[in-house]
Image 1 (tube, rainbow, N blue to C red):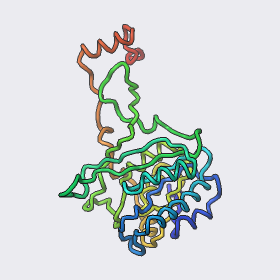
Image 2: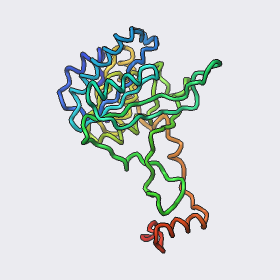
Image 3: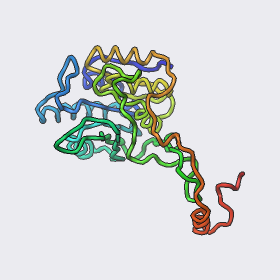
Length: 278
């Protein structure tokens, strides 16, 4: 289902063309201002200029968001605390969560600890918002009386592998994000048919996942090569996502009888509720 549009242009300018209060979710992976080369531009501004850039695109994102909309923003460690303050104090968004994306492979260091995570800020436009917990639950590790056996809340530490440079799914983009990362945000914060905007669409991951999940999506990128890459990627056949939370493959196991019995006694029942309908 190709229900996504990719626009080449400046994010702040392009979002001005989107109708106010029409968007259900914004997923933004802006440049981190670390000097990375994006082909037709280099991610290197004076920090006061970068802060103004951030406020400009956030103001437009806020304008197009519905009152019930959510926003997820990726950010590097050098600016994330300032970004948090801008979103909460300057724009009065409602803080929901600080998500840590943990990965096992990354840049090595000899004089310090090697970075193995990125951060994602999760805010909502108001205290009334959409969150589909049942759509993102992960299998429980054990059968036990006190667990919700439809699955557990995935928590705010997410483990997804990078899309490795030798992977068949890898695009020619320096900051490509794994599809399952976007899948979790989209499933949690939107329903089918909802509209998603990614102001810095890059390799097109958000649009590809949105299309696979029957969401509408508008992706924006300043680089015409990346915009073309995103359009091509959306049109490719979809088989499965390029990554997965490793917990999704586990099968709940029985606890030892002594522990299970203690659970039942603590709940003051004689027949585990889990088995009542079996």
